[in-house]
Image 1: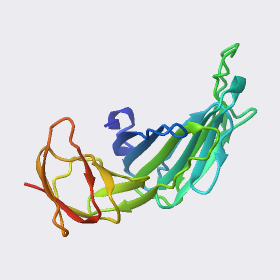
Image 2: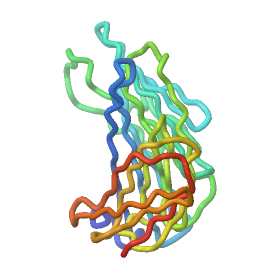
Image 3: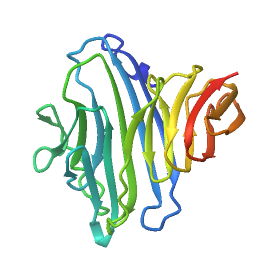
Image 4: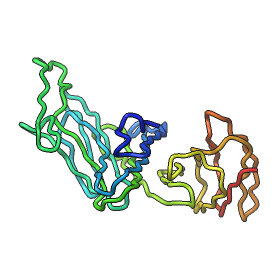
Length: 239
């Protein structure tokens, strides 16, 4: 909860959640999910997800790719903005705009950069339409520059959760970044590793129409369920 970092005249809530996946894949070893919930006091307050980069990013339709080629390096990020649904992805930077903030450049006074680490660009993700409440979900794949690994992440919703499907994973985030205690249903078309975050502590039961029935104890401070589930139609409820 980073609400206190912002003016209370402008926002009611600003919350950020992370999930890190170890893909156990040499070409794409890791994926980071970043979920942001922002509730502002006025629809005119435009909200931005920012990712600062050293080299110029490549912008696509709701995607952005970032390379690191300095001194023969081959780092690469493939990123996708799953939410908001009307996400617009852009970039700011380049000569005279390295540290541009709404038209004013604030140059970095560092005199030398032997490591090639002074940034010159940033990615901006924002919603096309103005509204008080926005939810951002960005999926960041960490890989080498071969780009042969790229997988398609998709967004779905339950009553209370925003869900990102990725490879054989389904990751749940509370839509409003609160601890949820209400019943929710979801469907899996194949065997899937499920990670449900933002759950109130206590006993939770997950059942399926096909006969799966398991009780999970959700610990305070962890507030998650992680399980490998077969295909089926599921309901989870707190007992």
